[in-house]
Length: 103
Ligand code: SF4
Ligand code: SF4
Image 1 (cartoon, rainbow, N blue to C red):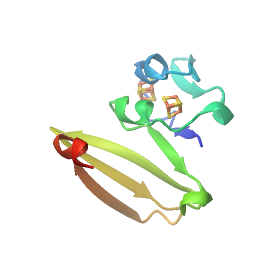
Image 2: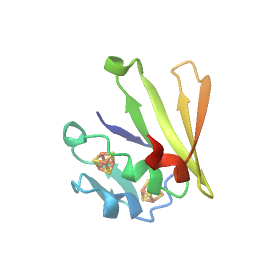
Image 3: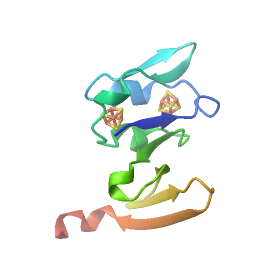
Image 4: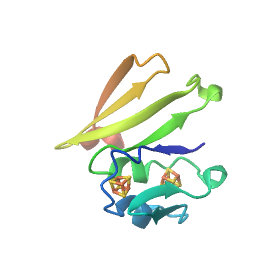
């Protein structure tokens, strides 16, 4: 599992590097860079934290992702999880975080 960082969109705030529990992201030339992709366990903390949605999680073939990437946008208690497929089509699933303990 790993993440993709869109360095063009990155504004260099450093929040993803700060929140990664494995210290896997570093800042270079004022932008975030994934240092150790093989070490990423896909906790999505960095994906959630990025204020400009520049971080996405690669969805591996083992879970049907086949090169798709996932980002998340917060809207109050709602989390909008969007999967972008290689052909650029998208699907969005919305989850209310207030219901998280129901499952
Ligand atoms: S998904 Fe988790 S482990 Fe992977 S880079 Fe982001 S914060 Fe670190
Ligand atoms: S959180 Fe987003 S904008 Fe901030 S450094 Fe990381 S990738 Fe760049």
